[in-house]
Amino acid sequence: LSDVGIVIKYEPHLSWYFTNQVYDIFTRILISDISIRTFKTYITPAFMTQYIQLFNSNNADERHFLLVFLSRLYAKFVPRRKLIRAEVNEYIIQLVVEHQ
Image 1 (cartoon, helix red, strand yellow):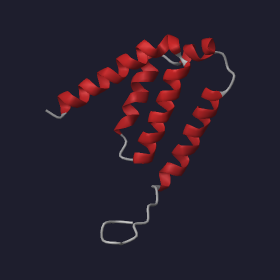
Image 2: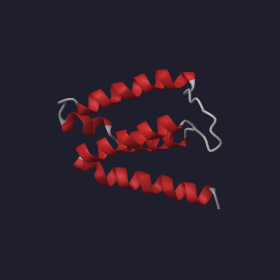
Image 3: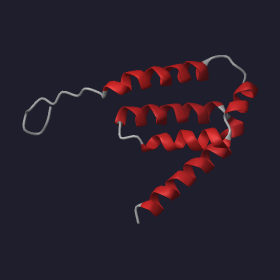
């Protein structure tokens, strides 16, 4: 409901339905009982750089899901926390420099 009493119907972009399925698979893998040692093989600096770049999406639902997934990654992978913080820091600095 907006300020003037008009009902605003929100419908996500069609591509979100497909993208959401991919993120659901990632989440299921993340919360599974696969060992952290196995995950460490895939959570590399290159992966984190590409993952953080996904926050450039115009889709608010996607950005929210990315944030939730990033929080779960951070909570589960203590050995990779330094990497995650560094990549997020780099991304924020890049945004600040671009918008000056």
